[in-house]
Amino acid sequence: MWLILILLIAGGGIVLSQFRNQQEQAQLAEKNSAEIAASKNAFIRDHAVYAKRLQQAYGVLPSITLAQAILESNWGNSGLAKNYHNLFGVKGTDPSNTKLLTTQEYVNGEWQTVKARFRVYSDDSASMKDHVLLFVNGTDWNPQQYAAVLAAKDYREAAVALQTSGYATDPDYPSKLISLVKEYDLDQYD
Image (cartoon, rainbow, N blue to C red; front, side):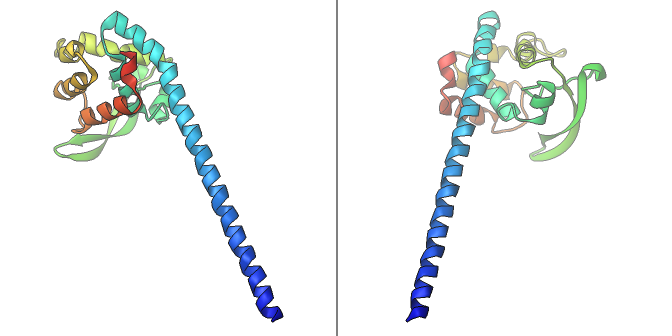
């Protein structure tokens, strides 16, 4: 009888301990989720004002600028964004203001690891302005390359124009941008 009583008490203690552990894990997950949401909101808030200013000066939709910055930099957490303020994965050729890094490119229907030179910026605003100026000025070989992005009436049209203009190698790039704009209401800044 005492043995049964001891086993019941011990079993109850184990169940209670497991319940407490589950509660603690749930609270920790909730806290982490809240911190991630706050961090994402801060990223948008910190960059939205300048994205709107750039739209007024150059005509690029803030929703697209923000969605691209989010996607390309993983909310400012990529090594390229953290270490070099390059929010958009902008490449360059001049060794004095670039870093040689490894990246993934979608080539011939598959993802490949390649080395490329990426531009280094003094701050996020410089990265954002350079990104917008790429759309305004085009490339050395085609000054009108991103004219359709500038002419876009809304973020959906701009996202598709980025793909057709050759901005990204990822075939899902437009849908990823559109999803980000919708999920975080980024078009409120347009």
